[in-house]
Length: 136
Image 1: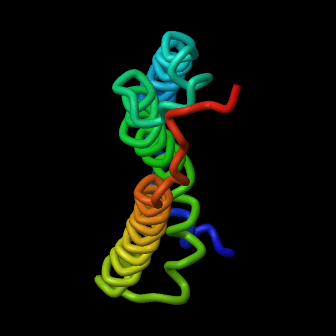
Image 2: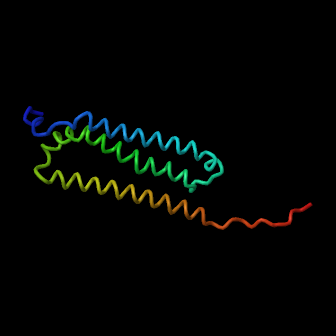
Image 3: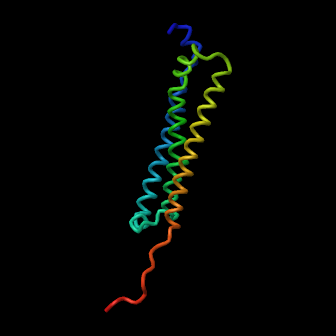
């Protein structure tokens, strides 16, 4: 890789910006931990759809994961751009990057939908009938 390739690659994101994303992600992770601690009785009872458990799940899925991924992307993307710059030209980088991001989001959505459908179907299965009268 030549010196000119490094100049074309751009500069890395400022450390303060990357650290801000990682600190916010860590805050969401800690909040999810405390939410799970508060929901321990519901988890022991098997009530995975209880509001406290769902709060912890959403703190991880919508708080921690996106912030950690964006922080990581800002940390390494300018370095990746230098490598990709020799292979792809101009705006095609944006098309390839956007397509890969959309493909990943679609795969994650399909995986989440399949998990939800399976969990919902298992919850809807008929339970064996129990008799009200117990033998003496």
